[in-house]
Image (cartoon, rainbow, N blue to C red):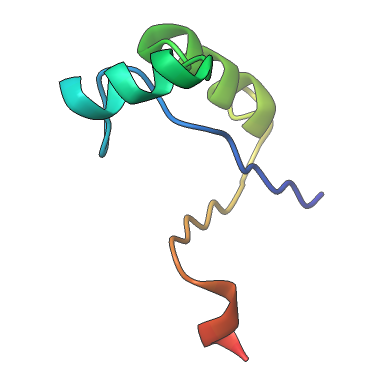
Length: 66
């Protein structure tokens, strides 16, 4: 099973500080709530009781991977 997740900005995590959060709000871009996002991520990964798994997290510019 291969799963690719490319979610938008999370509220209260990562690069989203107060200024950026205000800008997202101004543009009507919703933020993923931290607790709900984590629960959704765990659910999507199927981590609970799914047996052995491998998770790879990547943060890179796809153009640089060529």
